[in-house]
Amino acid sequence: MAKTIQDQTLALAGVFQATHLVDSLARRGIIDSFAFEASIQSIFILNPDSTLEVFGDFDGIKTGLRQLRNHLSARNLKHLDTLRYAAALLKLERTLSRNDAMLSEVQAGISRSERQIEHFSILHSSVIANLADLYTHTISTLHPKIIVNGEQNHLSSPETVNKIRALLLAGIRAAVLWRQCGGSRWQLLFSRKKLLAQIDHMIHLS
Image (cartoon, rainbow, N blue to C red; front, side):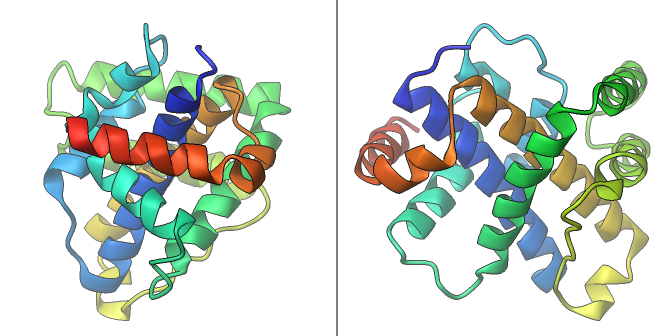
């Protein structure tokens, strides 16, 4: 993968899009369906020609770009869980990258879900349930554990929980992309202005 600041920004926005949607589901029980589909679709784009292809186009990652901009500019202090989930996913991805057996298990699970899409739509409840189950039996066994905060009436819904877990898997996929693009915590510390400039440019294109 290319390692430009644009590629790194797109990948990190993918992480924040997934975690924002997780937070929205847990707190309100609703999400932007277009952003949700783009995040779920990204799980299956494993050999892209470009970073943008993972999310389809700039519209597909617009929600993530806006959320990332809010956090980088300290304008989104209301729901810090989005940031907490994102930080945890980046740490989990580093742990996952050193676990070859689990990586193989995740890839096999994605392949099984991909075969399902031949018969169902990508957002079919069976596909989402299988992605959620894959997350539960792999990523969720690693540390740090992600504890999702929200309203109990939403978190007690099996359908909502499946969507949340599938989105956390999408967040891991974006975190993998972030590492492949050369992303690191140093970028977050020292390239904040460059990231913000890229975000504004890409939002304008969406």
